[in-house]
Image 1 (spheres, helix red, strand yellow):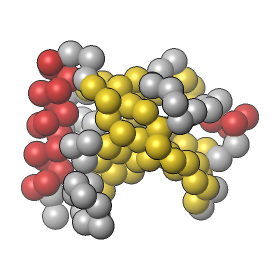
Image 2: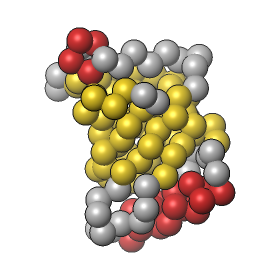
Image 3: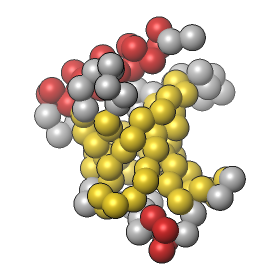
Length: 116
């Protein structure tokens, strides 16, 4: 768990799809009630992803099979950095497309807070 922030972010790992970038490998690195960090290949040619700060994107989180169901988040990128050959993007969560997405997200966070 990362505790240097106003809201606790839980270190996690899940596959993510960003908008229609279905071919790219994107991973969820950490998550909190108000934001998350995703990681994907550094080069645009490898990932095909170019996230801009002032735009909103839909993330579909695909948790491990024994976890809660998948859910979607509407995010807005806040920062991007290059680390270990990967691009990391920190995002604010803007909203949830449906109430079910919010419920699955809440269950996912509860599960993360119980992990050691």
